[in-house]
Amino acid sequence: MSEPADAGAGGTHRAKVWDPVVRLSHWSFVVLIPAMWWTAENSEWGWHRRLGLVLLGILTLRLLWGFVGPRTARFGDFLRAPGTVLAYFRGKLGGEGQWVGHNPAGGYSTLALLLAMLAQVSMGLFAGDPFDGMTGPLRPLVGVMTADTITETHETFFYVVLAFVVLHIAAIVFYEAVKKDRLVGAMVTGRRAVPAGAEGIGALPWGRALAALLFAGGFAYWIAQGAPPLT
Image (cartoon, rainbow, N blue to C red; front, side, top):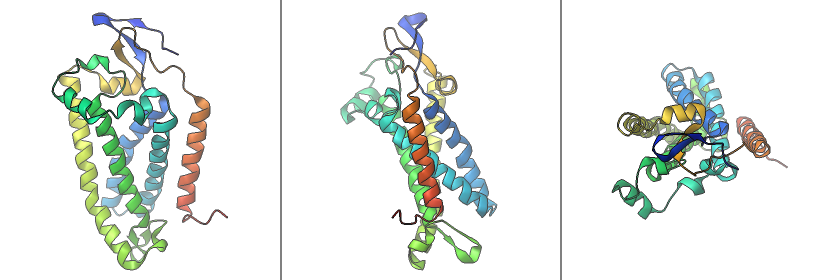
């Protein structure tokens, strides 16, 4: 099902390309990453743990949505062959307007940031020191030395996440300022200019969205309880 076209200049029209799950996930990361940093820097460990579990749930939702969501949300749509990515960087694939969703470089950038955040929050589940008053919910599942190593890595790996965030923001600024590709506006409204004849994503598959949301929320709650046996 295609989104009704709004006529535009240059053989393009505006169509819906980002669904609400992708957009809400994206803006949640914008809020949660600085909040996680602030709570850690100010020893607000209770809030740090709560926000970490929220981040885990949203990451789980977004990763699930990469398999069951609309076309532009799926990894199979925006993770293209390495040769395509190289050709894109060499300028051999035409203009930005031909990409309905992520361009070949943006797809891998998005996946890298998601995986970096997942690694960081996963380490946080095992991190902490009971003498400091707060540990991750899965801390009892590992030994003291392992937990200490994970905690140190968790603290250091934040700079890796930060590097991906800075790279992501720099790319957005470049495309906004140089290529005049309104990525921020598209992530707010869900709509952007696409080639004439290209289809949008149509209506949100609410059934799959609800199922993914329930699974992600249930998974985060189970982890918060210390991942007790399900039998």
